[in-house]
Length: 183
Ligand code: ADP
Ligand code: RBF
Ligand code: MG
Image 1: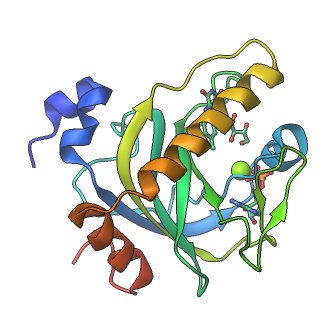
Image 2: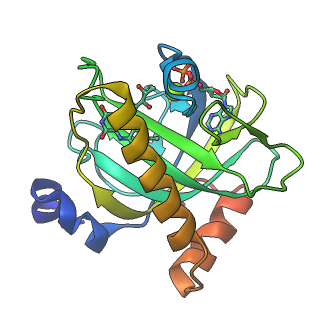
């Protein structure tokens, strides 16, 4: 696959997306729920399986949106962070989807910031298709600014997830299935 240009210029990622992946949900620092009110399911980067020939190292950092499913649950739209969380300055790269359940979903509870809080699903399998690139990850001055930005990303992801188009339908079908990321 010709990915060089896209990997150098993250906004070109939209040309090679969607990218599908599967992995196991592992523990991070636990900050998403506690400090931000926005939990993220951190994927086990050792066990990550990707649909395209790109390594985690070369995968462009940034904020993406897509569709995701945990174990046997429903398919949800997701706002996804890929990178080093520069507000915190992590030294390892993470892929972290925040799953967004509709307001009346029976599994959903509102977090402290009003976002989706589901029951814990550590160790379960996550299926994720990244459909679009939204913005670079940024170092924010203070948690309030970070939370505000993420809430904006969530709203945008919901809006994009409600659009009807062939790519999205196909990716939802894959997430709903048990097909491997790479056939
Ligand atoms: P960690 O740093 O361990 O990832 P977080 O505070 O980010 O901790 O919380 C993530 C965990 O919360 C997930 O692994 C999952 O078990 C649970 N969780 C609950 N609701 C959601 C959600 N809407 N999206 C992602 N993870 C969620
Ligand atoms: N962390 C940052 O440091 N900068 C960001 O711009 C940023 N954007 C995010 C956008 C979304 C949609 C999500 C879900 C997370 C984002 N994060 C960002 C990651 C956040 O810092 C991280 O999820 C928490 O620290 C918990 O691991
Ligand atoms: Mg997390």
